[in-house]
Image 1 (cartoon, helix red, strand yellow):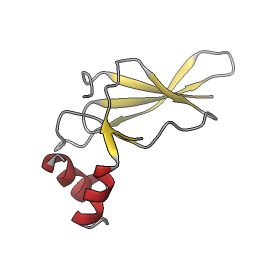
Image 2 (tube, one colour; image 1 turned 60 degrees about the horizontal axis):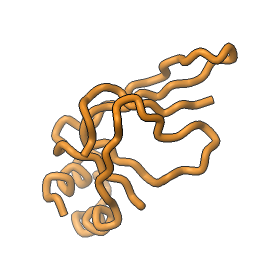
Image 3 (cartoon, helix red, strand yellow; image 1 turned 120 degrees about the vertical axis):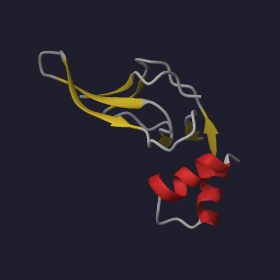
Image 4 (cartoon, helix red, strand yellow; image 1 turned 60 degrees about the vertical axis):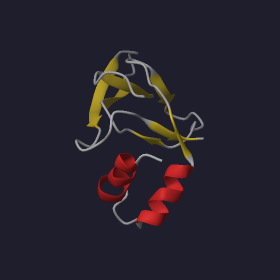
Length: 102
């Protein structure tokens, strides 16, 4: 278990959890690499898990009626985070990853 990531969970991502609860949550996660430009999921799809972004950023993209993409938001990982990503069930560069919504 990464003490750095445990600290990020306790102080930034889930500040209402106790250290023991955050440790239990962390024990259920596994690190995953996300490629730049990879679509994590599309609106309406069944989720693949719960993602904690601990490095880089993710872009939320909505598809317009004409099919063109529209950026809705960019969410950055906490500044105090270690350089890896974890998912329940090592992040790449800080370029946006995309979540496509329809």
